[in-house]
Length: 195
Image 1: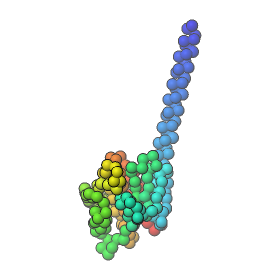
Image 2 (image 1 turned 30 degrees about the vertical axis):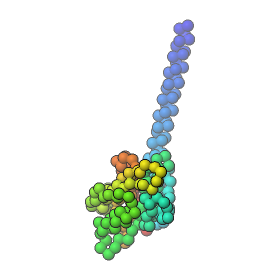
Image 3 (image 1 turned 45 degrees about the vertical axis):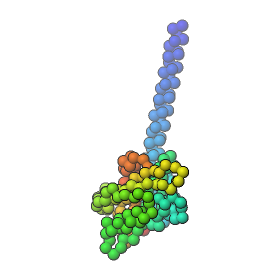
Image 4 (image 1 turned 180 degrees about the vertical axis):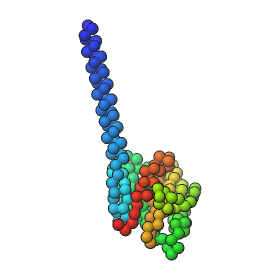
């Protein structure tokens, strides 16, 4: 009887150990896949994106959802497991004065004309990981679906001068902004045009 109890305990310990090992291996593989990035080149713009993210190259013109419409947009990307957060990249002309603040003002005006309750929360010159730029934090209400409750989006634009163009990296999310910010900053800094 005693031998039967020891055998049962060993079986339980073996199953628990095997399960814990499988969970740890799965967690390590997941973190490895999430952390892997690949450099993508879309319409002359190169950027590092997470490996599993989907890319949409449309500007959104003609769509019912005005939040997606952007005539300067090169592409947008999102995680298929969490589509509530979207990164996008736009190329805007820099103008004669090469002022990032002036380009940001034009973009803010365009957004205010097409988005419901668009508000600028903060705008300031920044140096992001050694790259000089301009940052605009904003929020807006997506009221495009008439049969649903409106959704509040938060966002951040980073503007970087690149030759005679301005690269605008945009993060829009209906979730907490802080969770997506580190990955977005890597995305924004990795962007370059004309390569």
